[in-house]
Image (cartoon, rainbow, N blue to C red; front, side, top):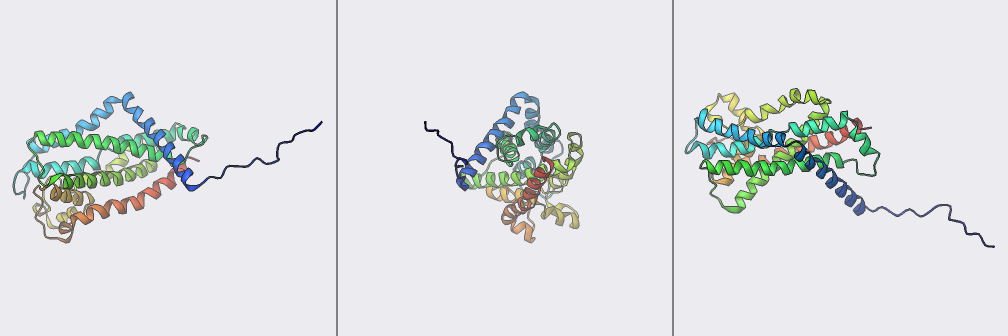
Length: 278
């Protein structure tokens, strides 16, 4: 009688770079859907995140507004600045989610599964970007109700939105890195204060020319000021009349600043996450 023996070593399917990328994208989409499911479980947090920038817009537009150094309608100057400010703020939910996953052992369970290590952070960032798009739509709608308009056509409008989302993506990875530095959910609020100077030391509410000389120079080189000035130009809205290099090349800086932030904080966040989740 003949006995059949299985080969000592079964052939292992080869894994190509394309297949690895495909699995990484699939895992990232799974993590994105996981983060989106939190919206249904925590609707109050989502609503507060959307309403807060609207409250700031109304407050500065009607209660505190004045727009020193602004030529033309203040609302036309303020709304693009508030759109940029919205992209800089509102990182708490992402920062809290990252620290909670690390502290509750969720990441350890994910590591035991056959999934790409980067999928957790990529999924979290993708969900945040989707929420940012919703937030932008809300702010644009409210600004339009207040009388704000853009005047340079669809292509310029889409380019401005692209710059806003690029800035948000860079700020998001800065927030993820700060969250992992904080380490615990209760420390997130304290660490997030480090992001505030980027938002408030900017030209979102007033022109650098209306500020003391040294402060105006700091404001002009702020990454958020570059984005705000660039989208004002793309929207055809009034902008600061400064003659500095930063003011005249705001469009270039609106691309370079986020690229530099991503080049620094994306690899830092990925490496730190890999170490913390071991």
